[in-house]
Length: 274
Image (cartoon, rainbow, N blue to C red; front, side, top):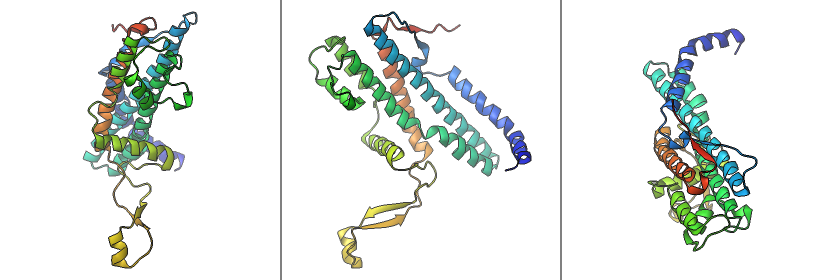
């Protein structure tokens, strides 16, 4: 693309760029997420326990803010995509769909799972690593399981803290059914370790599958596997977003509940809206 053509395209897209930016900021200003109402303040002279709380909680809250921004960028891009499609601008609609919306939307699930692990690390550090001594084995489901069976306090955490944390962490996958959990696990593993997943598009259309015994008998073949080209995308935005919307609400509730725990009150403050 030469510079002149680039300028023409930018001029053509300027109203939509402004609308995208405006929609995104409106979403932020009117966001229902309670976690955004809190601020973590840093005190370099605080006791060790409070410094751990403020450091890890700051990391968690900042990661959540970035996740919210990413989510809203994708939703506002989706609005532009639909508007352009209604106007018959299929080419530009596809640009917003694949180049903008999917760019942000694709990373939400891996970020969600990483954020859960951040919470697990914070909880384990507050236990002075008495919940899980091997830090390489600290992850969300692991710490959640340990909290559920723990019958006494650990480190700076009292037994009452342990019980409350166990309850709070149980909200992470609230209202997420088994099918959705399988989708989340497969999505995360695929995008992290396998390939660039397709959302409303095919990225790796050829797939390996196991040949059934009936097929081997019918076609007189000895091979155990075959390759086929699929015409169906890995995921659709609409279906995936149904699950992500629930995850975002759950994560917000979980983190805001963490911020409201008694031992966090020395490191968080509620933002007063003017």
